[in-house]
Amino acid sequence: MSNLRSELRRAIQLEIEPMESVLAAFEGGSAAFGRDDEYSDLDLQVVAAKGEAAEVIVAIEMVVENRFVLNQRFELPQPTWHGAFQCFYSFKAEPYMLLDLVVIEHGVNWTLTEEERHGIPVILFDKGGYIVTTAVDREKIEKEITVKLAKIEPMVAMFSSFVDKSLDRGLGIEAMHFYQRMVQTPLIDVLRMKYDPTRHDFSARYLHVDLPKEIHDQLEGLFFITSFEDLRVKKRAALALFNETLAELKADA
Image (cartoon, rainbow, N blue to C red):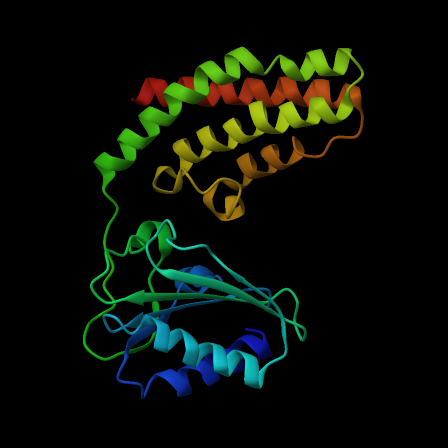
């Protein structure tokens, strides 16, 4: 753990734990999977009493601004997709290390609780059993994958040839754009559906732990392009892997 991350966590906890408006706090992210390292962010999630989120946010931001040198602050527009306040902070001392702060009001339907997707919270304190995890809804996951596959398969079949057409026109930027959109991204999606269906929607994040090493290394090799001809070759290889994985998914359905 970086010095800044540990100092920041300690300073915020000392400030908010005595507050009556704060019910619990925990770390998520890589720490929740036991994979945090010197590059990891501080993914801090705080449970506030109903109607008290604003007070808690002010208290935390006073710690952040008064004791540390901020580089940038980026707040997600409200309402967020998950229903809670979320803001990111970067610091001049360690530009890689972000504070990813989420403040959840008790009673709000909180969606980021599945252990398979988000790990086991590292509890800093819990004043009354407010931190509760759940299991994924397997049936819901299967339905989401079915819907996604129904969109991905015809899209790739129809538009993956745009890569070759753009190369034939000598349009390298356009060819790379279509390779990324119509081949690489769908390939990541189907590989996730096969090897880690509970996180089928996590895109390229955490692929190094969610895919088997040999598959990850094969995929990584398809991302680095040296020439027009190299793109043609890797596009064919990526499309072959996509079709192979798609067939396996359909056979298992």
